[in-house]
Length: 103
Image (cartoon, rainbow, N blue to C red):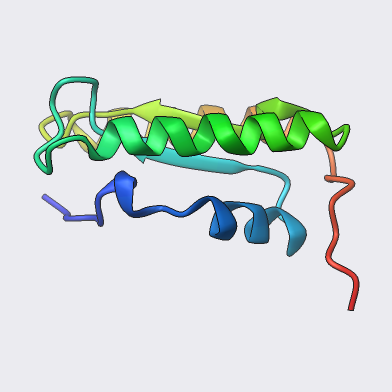
């Protein structure tokens, strides 16, 4: 089993920075609701993804470029791969993002 940082540690600023750097979208993987081992990390990640979606909508960019998926640490690795592969495919269908940092 692999260990990853808690999804609740992700910061809205860094998510937006990923898009400004040319990313087509963001996919955050969190534990299922009610199963976070670090209190409410998955809840915090959901709030941050919603904040990014709101910001994207405000600037005229598709909010669906920010996605939160849930996968339990006890799930088979194939489940995580399937979730991420499907999300990446959906993000790729959106095409390039219009967000680009100038500089």
